[in-house]
Length: 145
Image (cartoon, rainbow, N blue to C red):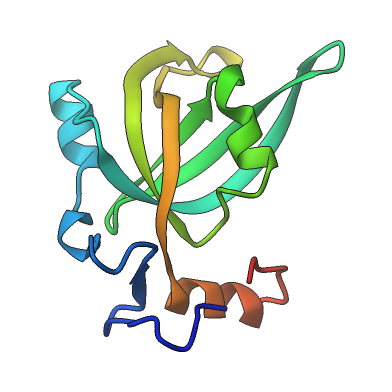
């Protein structure tokens, strides 16, 4: 839980560093990224889900479902940054700043069309959404305190 002195705004957004609030940085970005193929480094997204996916022979990848308040997109974390997610520094309901990421297009499953996703090279947690965490708790999900 956030410390008693932490200020929670009406949307439930809490900045990890109160002297540098993230509220003004949270805005719809995904549609622009998909349209322009340009990724603004330092963008802030809500982590809606975290999945660990087996790739082959014991190796795995980390997939984040990243939201901007309107849309969500898959973000695959580069191997060099897995430690950040595995060390629970990134969590569902948290906001992350993507300092290095790019848009990639891959073949869809089962002969489907092309899929677009983000390849994340550097990220850090900058806050959380208290209301989102309450929803997760209400669903009986384990939530980072």
